[in-house]
Length: 247
Length: 304
Ligand SMILES: Nc1ncnc2c1ncn2[C@@H]1O[C@H](COP(=O)(O)OP(=O)(O)OP(=O)(O)O)[C@@H](O)[C@H]1O
Ligand SMILES: [Mg+2]
Image (cartoon, rainbow over all chains, first blue to last red):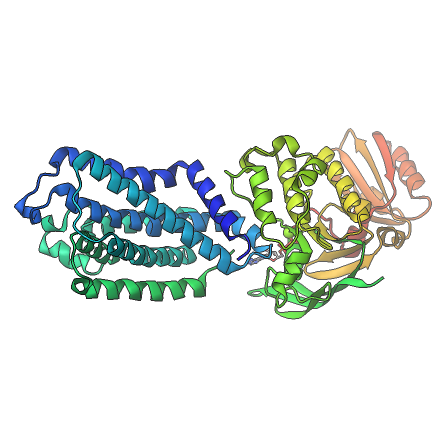
């Protein structure tokens, strides 16, 4: 695994020097939370089973941050690195493909985690965010969800040819997913039709699992979500490994 | 001298296009070997097959007795490459890039020395995107030399550089050669091949059409020379075509360029021009170069 730690550090440097990634992963979800928080507040209500708007939104927004990584950050940056010939240059060294893959996975996992922690901290500081789950379980669930979307991201990155296409495809998957999955609007307020469409949207299972674990549900209450996410990781991960191209 | 690179009957097609059609050559230790040819001749395809970066259809390649694809990691630790089409992250600093690439190799040279040698010390904290074309190329050379390789591949290292930067690059190449390394390079500048290379393979349409030292290639031209002059008024090319030994005549704006051979060709041309009362200035005769070799062998110019 020669070069692994340097590669991860390099990705961090690039990330902090470019506005877009920073904004979407770290700032955008927080701004949304602050806007909606200032409108709805976080008073406990029967509508949310005794919790407030923010309490329900934060775990759903975790899904949004996870989706940003998989649908936008990864496909866009990998495809444009490939398009520019940055990957071609890397390939001319003894760097092993597994090493760079692992570096990307670790890096995107860490920034998704960082974005999530900032979001949770914002909720806690400004709105006294309530949490009823188990920290270890939520971390485990978060890891599963992130993995499934990272693999989706690498699959998309293998299919698209240019950074620009990645951008278009990423956006056109991201916003509908956000809407239909309940990541943006609490699922309690979604109509049955939208909820039914949501069943075909991977992000729905992320939101279900994160919200469930957040409020202390047992794993057994989420068998189906977990099955879908694991299947997604395996299927898309193997497709990505199979069709990934450096040029 | 032992062969460092051996290429035997290399073939590679893209769909129906035969980009490389049965190329064979050897490169000896310590040589600068040049592959020259016009755009689309198959230079990059050839060198990238040898570098193990492209799959090919047929043929055998061995570099330092290694198979570039099967012994990939070992091979890449012992060679250095500069690629025609590649890039580095815009928002990384020069030193960060070198430091990152050094971490991929088993061993690497002192980074400060390399920066100094290639005149990038002052630029080491600059982003890659802020470098000039020549500085970028020098950084790519540093990356190609970072692991102290035995063999270096350079694909059009001087394309896009101004003449001064190109000369400076040539000096660096000679220094690298003098440090005992073997270089395989491609170029479409015949002048560059003549200046740098111990041996040259001229390729056109995926074939090697000549392979020898630059001197021998030129010598085989039987004293072909290039004569050029400027004219004030239009005139009929045809009257020159009747002369003995004319190979080719071209008019570019008001400049006439003649290729031909024979002892008296200059005299014949001048006589004919004055007999026909054609005003001319800036008369020039040039000894043949590789450019002329190409023209002679293929019947067309390197750059049309
Ligand atoms: N990846 C590819 N897919 C399809 N055709 C290709 C590909 N790469 C090269 N070709 C074609 O193969 C031929 C040889 O290309 P190559 O890049 O090897 O030429 P070259 O001698 O390096 O040219 P240049 O001086 O422009 O760099 C060209 O006709 C080119 O269009
Ligand atoms: Mg080329």
